Length: 223
Image 1: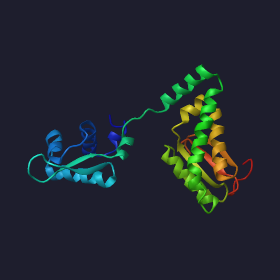
Image 2: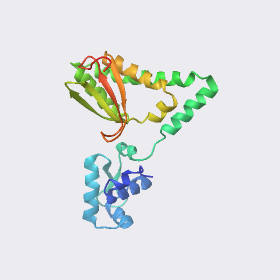
Image 3: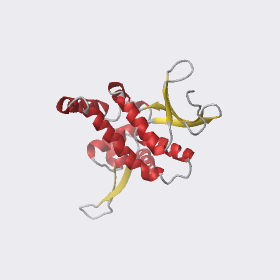
Image 4: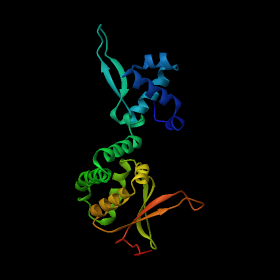
């Protein structure tokens, strides 16, 4: 099943092609036309556009009889992200199972290990940056690859900050508030400076978000 929500945001023909390739494992344009309707050139254009975006690839299937190899289209690994994966609900169930099996501190120990592994994975890239601003900007980009959605901002009054509008672990943080501090500590260790975390409620001023203010880049202590 294609990731819910995306069906309404992308071209209907693309969704149908991705669905059909997911089910079949790979098809030529004539067969896609037979299953989905439409012209050969129109279908080929859709497939080639998906190839350029990196969600589909072409390969040649040798014919058993005499003739040119048949051009086939199939999904790439990048397309996996378009289909639902085991997510936060599974994480919460596993953390609760760990609590039942190993005691009340088990979930926090697991989350500490998780953030420690992120730190070890990200540090080789962050260590090559030449400034704190560059490092913080790269950290924001790395977090986005993990499912966060944010923007780096700078203004004279509040300094440099990362504004995040979505975090995939928000339900985990709600169930295990201590994880917020574990993540913040990881970020401070990666940047080598204090970070002020502020939860900004939504309202007429804009959507709810979390601000990570980098203390050594213009943030007022206690502000």
